[in-house]
Image (cartoon, rainbow, N blue to C red; front, top):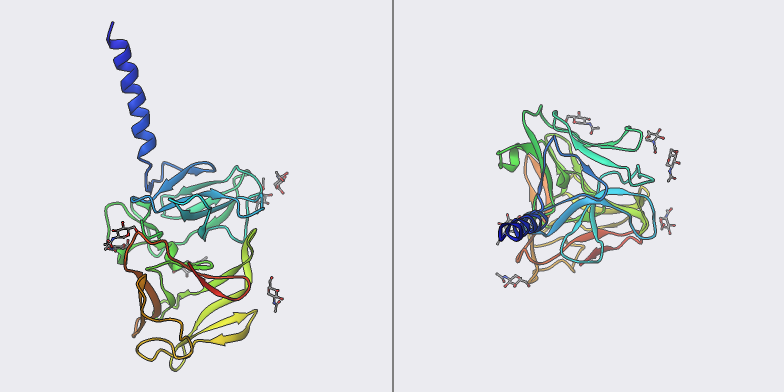
Length: 267
Ligand SMILES: *[C@@H]1O[C@H](CO)[C@@H](O)[C@H](O)[C@H]1NC(C)=O
Ligand SMILES: *[C@@H]1O[C@H](CO)[C@@H](O)[C@H](O)[C@H]1NC(C)=O
Ligand SMILES: *[C@@H]1O[C@H](CO)[C@@H](O)[C@H](O)[C@H]1NC(C)=O
Ligand SMILES: *[C@@H]1O[C@H](CO)[C@@H](O)[C@H](O)[C@H]1NC(C)=O
Ligand SMILES: *[C@@H]1O[C@H](CO)[C@@H](O)[C@H](O)[C@H]1NC(C)=O
Ligand SMILES: *[C@@H]1O[C@H](CO)[C@@H](O)[C@H](O)[C@H]1NC(C)=O
């Protein structure tokens, strides 16, 4: 009569194991519904549906996985909210992430740089959501990455600037309010002409310029200096122009946000 408790034990531990090891990867056969999430390998970031602030709208986004205060760092459908919890995101065989509403209309979609064979979408521990061929871990070969499409947040490892070959532009745009991630009136962009520098725009008026890079920092941005949290670099070559921060200790939760009031907040 010992086998019944043993079976019960096995079943329970199976459930515990299933719950304790969420996946970091989305396959074409496994859509994510509102209420589901995927978690990066080290647990640092989570992808799922959320409502910001006092809003009841639902958004597909990425937030910190280990702290209880909901802190979105990327939002897919920032301009096209869902008004209920019927949203579902799928990875198509073509390698596109498509977000569908209750009536099955595509309200947001990613893009792809090449035709896909056997695509997967993986949430990396850097916070980057990457669509790639299964088993191909070369970041150069990715089909699409959320780091190429930032919203209001610059995460360590992501670039602010532009790809001079494809013309792809990596800039930040504030949220309209803490309850509304749609585009606000503050942008931080690269001005690529001459000696490149960054500008803060309110609507399309320049409020502030960083001044060009002088080898150590930006001449007009004296507060950017060596520190124990991150290193930073400015790269200017034939292919790309970008600013990027890199964490010294990956356990630090660090981000820079283009905020509604025009500050570039770091925390
Ligand atoms: C969501 O929007 C649809 C289409 O406009 C509408 O029919 C539905 O009643 C709305 N749902 C809620 C919960 O407001
Ligand atoms: C789904 O999105 C389509 C296209 O934006 C819209 O016309 C439709 O009302 C939406 N359905 C619901 C239930 O929100
Ligand atoms: C998708 O990518 C292609 C090729 O890179 C580009 O021409 C097109 O404009 C992009 N579409 C969108 C909606 O970003
Ligand atoms: C920190 O994370 C980045 C991106 O995930 C990774 O490339 C790097 O190797 C990590 N550094 C350390 C010291 O673990
Ligand atoms: C930009 O948005 C802020 C906050 O919503 C507002 O106070 C400000 O007046 C806006 N600026 C312009 C030029 O519309
Ligand atoms: C990184 O930070 C974590 C958490 O603060 C700490 O436990 C760890 O020792 C640090 N690692 C290094 C290499 O300093």
